[in-house]
Length: 191
Image 1 (cartoon, rainbow, N blue to C red):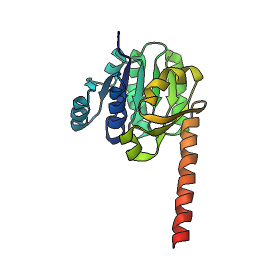
Image 2: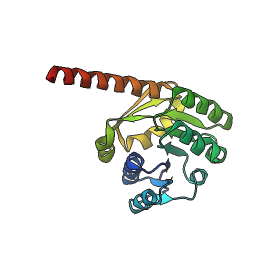
Image 3: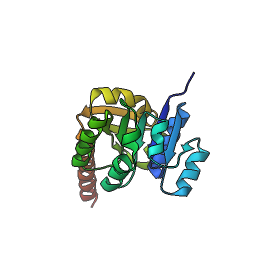
Image 4: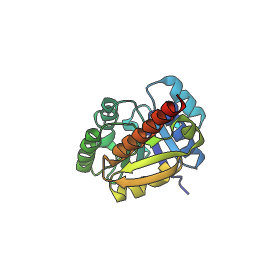
């Protein structure tokens, strides 16, 4: 029986832990990071390191992107050739915090290639990533969500479909605003 496969672009503090949990759940995981130390650590955890973001498309129909900025998201998804090489019906999960506009632009570009795009930012921080108990807010089509959900459940305790593309980012922003408001209120009360 063939193992299910997943790809990860970005194997830093969060991406490494997410990929590690997917390996532990029985997936073959292919990944890459710009830092060789991150690649080495991920390889030791069972991730197959590839030579480029586009090379992941040869192995994995579900790809999770966890990089730092909107520009990096666009670079690894569009400019690297990943989108051109993924098969129709594949799904890219943008776990990076990015703008709603970037998520929606990617959805349009992906649709032209037959590739689903989900914006799937995560919350609860590093400890939840380490433990595999992140909350994942997913924006995008129900079909793409259904395909990618098993991968996200490997690192997320709560994986929620919250609407169309962009809604994952908006939901995370609202979550953070509520958290920061509570922190400010707690500080004022303690003060």
